[in-house]
Length: 264
Image (cartoon, rainbow, N blue to C red; front, side, top):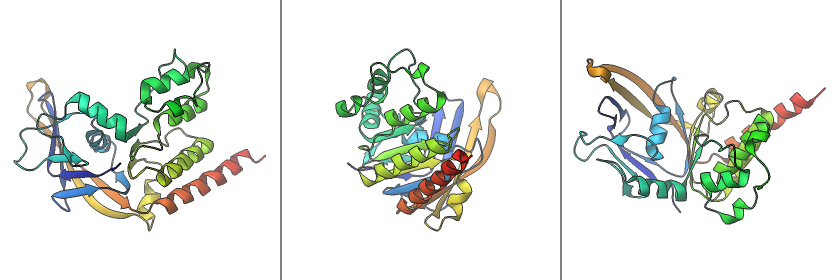
């Protein structure tokens, strides 16, 4: 399995011909995402989630109006642009290659095993880890978060999209998250897209990460037949191609926080 993305800028997305968002690169026309962790830093509303959803084939369509030969996105050398990728094919790619957390949500009236089968049920061996007699609506909030991580974060998939994954996690759940991420990276996990306000400053100051690109994000809104409103934002992309040390430091930090919170 591979986890290689190639983006040729500018990348123009459209929704219902009334809203568009354009991602353009300040560093190079072409950017490769592969074998490492990519952290997206930007203000709220800067388009971080949209950019990840675009790569994960979960939102929007790439505009046909873009410059010829530009505005292309490829995953493992399969291009999806113009009218977009067929939704069935997109679902097949997501099912086979991607973990997307925490976009998925529980179906509360059914068991945790049925939730796994509905949300991510491609592995019979993993399905057996979940119970037919345990129901998410009877679990605490922290227990629900842990089960959702178990369901979505699949060690056998090479690409993980993590959009604000640490929000509302206590030290115990953060420790579990980082250990799960570390274990995945020792197995099949290759490429990670990550955004989280909790640790942005740590990543920017971490010697293992470097600023590899800045995206200029232009949003156009012409809803209701009004004159198009233009807003410009920026996303900085930091990359680490050897993130194990970073994972280990986050595990140690969560362990310290857990010990402090449990002290009398």
